[in-house]
Structures are given as structure tokens and as C-alpha cells.
Image 1 (cartoon, rainbow, N blue to C red):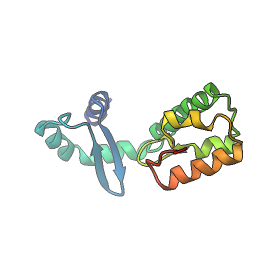
Image 2: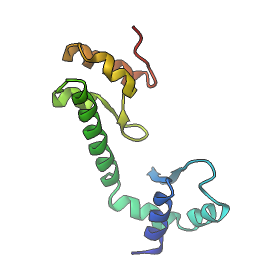
Image 3: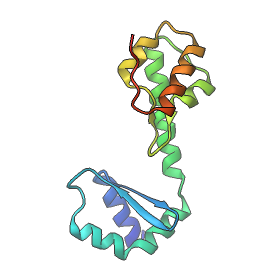
Image 4: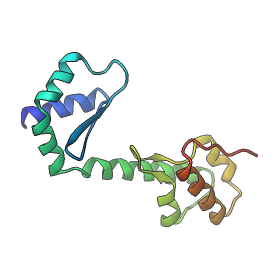
Length: 135
């Protein structure tokens, strides 16, 4: 494993997400996670990290999406819904990281709704992130 790969794993273990966007690195981390030393190492390792991310740029995102889909399926199943793959795909938002489009507490309010109604609600939540269901 290269020094860049080891550094990448260290950052991930501390909750930082390093991505390549174009020819630039983007690092998202909880406040206080990155030290000035980390910032220096990111600058020094930029070329190696960009190369590393270019080798398997989508693998981590695919895994995160799969996990988000599984969690979403389980959350809807807990409330009695077995969603079609198409509806399930709409339930997961991909940007910046895959997550459930709805707030978990909102899923319970859809328990007696048809799949078409759920699909419509999910589409609104994808277009307007942070939307809450109000009765």
C-alpha cells in the first residue's frame, strides 16, 4: 500500500471523505477532524491521491449507495411496504453521498399510501432536499 493510500485510509477512519472532482481534491470532514499537518499532507499527496481515486473512483460510492438502498428497503419494510426497484432507486439521493431522501420519521406516515403516492413524495424530496411530510 502506498503512502497516499495509507493516508487516505487514515482520513476515512477519522470520518473524512476525500473525493476527486475534476483535477481537484475535495475533502469533507467533521469540524476539528483535520489538522494543519493533514492539510499539508493533502497538498503534498495531491497527485498520488488523484491517481488513487482515478483507479477506483466509483467503488466506494457504489458501496455507499448499496448500503443506503438496503437501509431504505428495511425502513420501508418495517412499515409494511415492499417497494419496486424503481421506487427504491428514487428513495436514495446520491449527492453528495447516498442517503435516504426522506427523514426516517416521515416513512411511517407513508404506511397506508400507494406506491405511486410514495414515488411522488420521493420525487419531491429528491428535488427539494430536507423536505418534511406534513399532515
